[in-house]
Amino acid sequence: MARIASIKGRLLYNSRGSKTVEIDVITDNGDVGRVCAPSGASVGKYEAISFPDNSPEKGLEILKANEKKFIGLDPSDLKSIHEALREIDSTSNYSKIGGSIAFSLTIAATESAAKSEGIPMFKLLTKDSDLKFPFPLGNILGGGAHAGPGTPDIQEILVCATGSKTIRDSIEVNLSVHKELGKILAKKDPGFTNGRGDEGGWAPKLNNEQALEVAARACEQLGFTLGKEVSLGVDFASTTQWNENKKKYVYDRAGFENTPEEQIDFAAEIIKKYKLAYAEDAVHEEAFEDMAILTKKFPNILITGDDLLVTNTEILKNAAKKRACNAAILKVNQAGSLYDAIEFAKEASKNNIKLITSHRSGESSDSHISHIGIATKSKMLKVGVMGGERIAKLNELLRISEYDLIRGMVEI
Image (cartoon, rainbow, N blue to C red; front, side, top):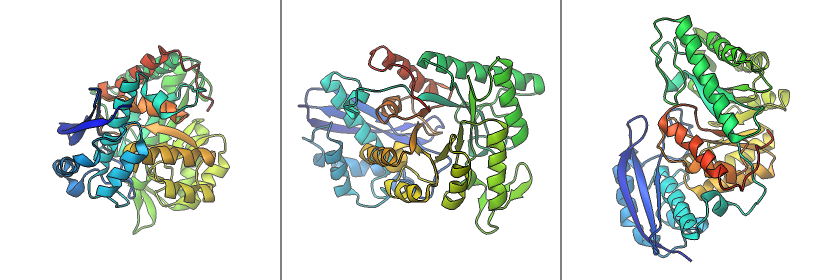
């Protein structure tokens, strides 16, 4: 059995050019797990703090000072590594050492253990042999916190090849829709610069309705029927619009405001009109009752909590009691450690809440979440469509298909 022999951390940069950390976990037989932490732009109030005092350097210093706590541990034993982390930082949000340190350390340990055993990482994370590929879900048009002024208030319009039977076909369909949308935008606006947001989605100067219309048209011009071969999704990221003082959703770019009741109707109309398969954070991060109304209204749509849940098991338990959602985003760095995220996944499964494993807007070129998505039986893998840091996750799914251990796609 391999043991952790050493840990090495370094300062790197994510896809937005912001500082982040990368950690190597080296076993006593020389196998190296290496993980670089991502970061989000649309951040939930209750998610793990990325770095203590917003300083990646301080997080690395704390890790180095406590390296001995991890030496000799079994890198495949996530619980023991998690407990060692908690000896250093017992805060609920990893404010002392930083969630990015917990993220990188625990996933790097898992990767080193998988290499030591000569198996793919997803096989180390689950003993279940009945595994299928999640559907790639990708941002084709961005706005909100992921793009600049003039773009839609809605943060992401996404595409998912819900009719595909293979992982390669599902990736190619997403790519084709993204490219077709680019052609439509260039024709619509000769001055369009081919600008893209943080996650590779086009960032045009359009309002919400125009953006949804052109996204639907891109699918239809390729011969796809919305809701069958291809489905759209929307990440409303409504917390970014919520004004606590006014108790309203303020859409600055579009020039209107919604009461909570109007916001529910606004989201419901979009879900119906565009035959969405996926709707994320249609209301703000503490509006559990409002989210429950949408979940009841659309039982066959993935009414998904991200900011609502922040990959927090205790919050998920509360949401499950209120039936506030039927799907949940799993972002390991929101939770902190991979152990935290796996516990969240178990709680979701217990409550029949479907999982969507997700990237962050500030990403690395790592592809570990492709393995995590498979191991947690996620229905979708939200990883983008374009950009090297997004393609890395999709390419890893294709490599995994060569193992011939996973057959077909999940049922959504």
